[in-house]
Image 1: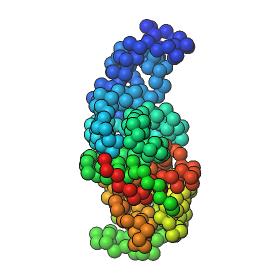
Image 2: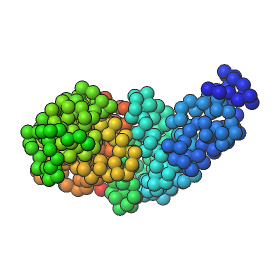
Image 3: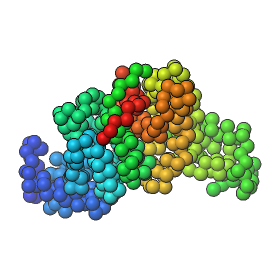
Image 4: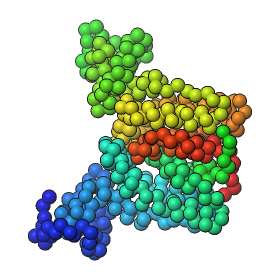
Length: 200
Length: 200
């Protein structure tokens, strides 16, 4: 790894990020992702666009996947605002339709490449599971928890419902069928929210 | 493409496969997959092991993905027999546990690589969706339809339930968490089979 003259090696810097530099790098990475998608995305090019040292970027985002997730998260936050319809099913329908719409754009569709790369090794898969997913699922978890807090929803099996919701979306993403059909989404979100627990 | 002396080019042969040759090629491909996983899997090596002409194999399975799916399907059929417990939820729990167990073996885990490859282009994704999935989902569809036929299950939304079931499994496969926990599977299959349709 090169270090720039302006970024002498300091072993302790990892824990203390300069917020302005961090923001500049994420914004450069976000624009790079929007311009070039996953294939054209690199730590080097994001550092160059941000006018930051490559070593700095590598120190804060050790892999392409880490910086990608920061950029993807920033772009997703710009593209999607969380609904608040008063109904969990309607919130899920709108949020899922928004997510699929985002996935149809180049920066959103780049998530396919991240999922594909995570299949190359169990280490990449663990990183996806333990570091990226809790952040990615924060918005949908908020929808479930808000509905539970207002008493609409019995708060049963939220983790399992999030896994079903995410799995259904991934299934559609990975099979290239993400033209959101609201009637389909409403049928599926109704099943996801369903409260009846049947005996086997 | 080479043609062997024993396999002169016949333009019409695609429609009429020699069943013995076909069986020999699939069996060779199945063993190759079990020995070497997806990375070591190739049409050339399967043809060599089967003593068949490469051109013959390419004519019947035009891409690596096609021959892989034939081999994967054969290996899956050897590894998994469909349960018949009399309860749809229990059938799903057992079938899913069997599937995850199969995915933990090298030939089963190779399905990750197929999913990853299908992200490279919409054409690869369409092939997965339109040609491979209907075959892969035949066993689970049979479980749903049998339960509906015996009146256990109202036969509502079977396609949506299969997508939820498959999506949940893919989510676990792609995040490398396929150690089947029967209690988790029972909670999830109960949601998948749930009959209550709530108003939004």
